[in-house]
Length: 167
Image: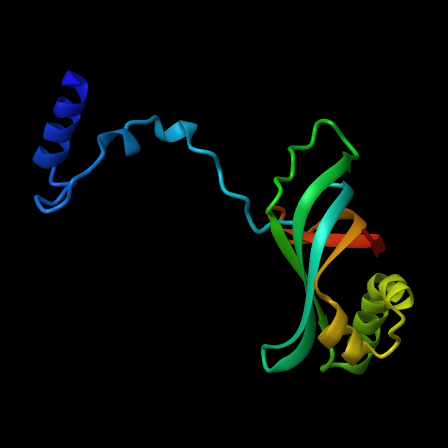
């Protein structure tokens, strides 16, 4: 009890706490290094994952694109034990442009097809608009994920997703 009153006095003296607030000092009495890190927004390390998938059409740099947004539910199997764990809750996304230079759009749509075709077949929906609008909101999938390093910025990684199936 003596420790709590000392902590309260320190909080008041350091102006962390207003006189009008009754603070429970035990809420702050911890080592900051012991606080668990939050999941980030980053490309997952290579492995098999259970993911939540959301798809949407959005405007990026004045061009329409399909965004596939993923949230890691579970890492089922890592390809390398030396890679750090990808925490559940980690998010990442991929953009597939629908407008722009024709060859680039063709490649973008081809890559989108590689990911979505297995889901379209399982869900019985071949129309891309209807698939995105009606079926790909919070759907759980399993997939092989990895990361590709940027050619110029060696600190930046892009996600890769393949072998997609409904979970």
